[in-house]
Amino acid sequence: MSRLFILIPAAGRSSRMRGRDKLLEPVEGQPLLRRQVRLALGLRLPVMVTMSNDRPARGAALDGLNGVHRAVVTDANEGISASIRAGASWALAQGARGMMILLADLPELTLDDLKKLAQAHEKTPETVFRATDATGKPGHPVILPARLFGKLQALRGDDGAKPLLQSEAVTRIALPGRHATTDLDTPEDWAAWRERQEKPGP
Image 1 (cartoon, rainbow, N blue to C red):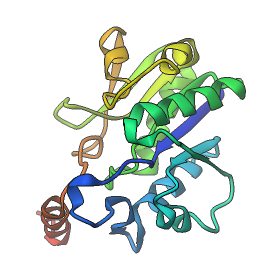
Image 2: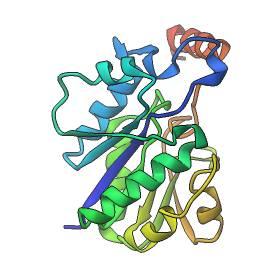
Image 3: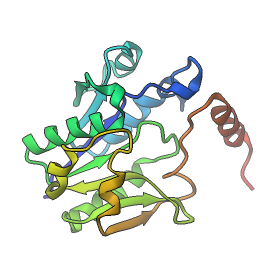
């Protein structure tokens, strides 16, 4: 079996939330970060969450969850690349065949979505996969094979793996609705999303 590792970057600043922390916003009765980690654990694969020392409430949101490797990223202010570097080093050291980057702020993702991506990696572990929404718009998660771990360890800045994806042949996997692209960065985004969730379907 191809061993896939899951990285959940959670060291960001939520700078556009004006004092609130988007990763602690309640979704399905729990903090969003806890929800995302529980989803990942549902795949029964190794899970690592990167965190910063100045956000202790995020760590507290994960209390009681077993099987999560927490890593403090001391250079988190640099951006998401710091988390990706840490994740790639961890996955490489453990002999992973691939790493899924699962953003912590996608509240519509489901376990079935993650399974769909993981199963695609299992069939062709050397392929780069990227989730899209139902219209084909690129989103997340992304799965990167082990052959790219060295390049991931060299990333800098807040563009994450974007430069690497631009240089690779990427296989896109469509997920339902906007599961792959609904990221909520402001209080207004959250209010609008919650209003949509409360409306009955057609």
